[in-house]
Length: 322
Image (cartoon, rainbow, N blue to C red; front, side):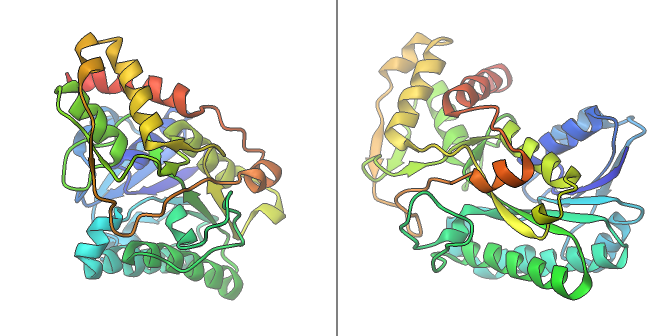
């Protein structure tokens, strides 16, 4: 069994990783400042001898150094997400996503951590119009957030070449699932829409609803993190991977699926109308990942397509938000 540090381990993806790896018998250390994560996401692990919580900030070098002590692997999830948030406040996004990332890399290097796996982003593809997105063909970033996530990849590559660190970046594509927060100004589209429908309120689609995304259920992301952590294939290390399904769904289709599944719990949801607003600044029209690289080098096999993931996610929200 390994000792794993999960930064941002009280957040949406981080808490799912924490639960999974504790369930596998690993030791898990969570570093979180609770800026976007929640204590209730990890409360069930209190008293587990294999679980340790360090309340700290990746912008603080001492917190990073403390967190990596004796750690075999780092799963770096801590970041300030959201394109709109980065447009409104680029400085804080940079401090957390770039300076904090560099702090973690340095701490992991100095502690001789075996491998550093980090949450990269599909936003790195920027203005590239080619579909599907292939790892070695990117465009220019369209937001401060996208810049920060691309800089992460550059730093990881330099640390691999300069210091011999093992790094793997996972470019997440529109991840959704249990514990994704429906509240707050920057809530992701799926939990936000679910909450609106459950309250019989009209969700707002930015634009016509024809924009499409490679929506990726959180269990697929857990699988990718585990495969990145455990691979012994030298060709699979010191690179980046799309972390997605390899299929795309329009926002209009998404709304249809959500209505279909939520109506099973509340028939009135079928009659809730959808409102269309203006397109959102910094959004790309379409996103679709090629997952061939992950399949070939890591043996990745997505366990959930969009409808399977949405069915599980809507049940979780119904059970936990009502």
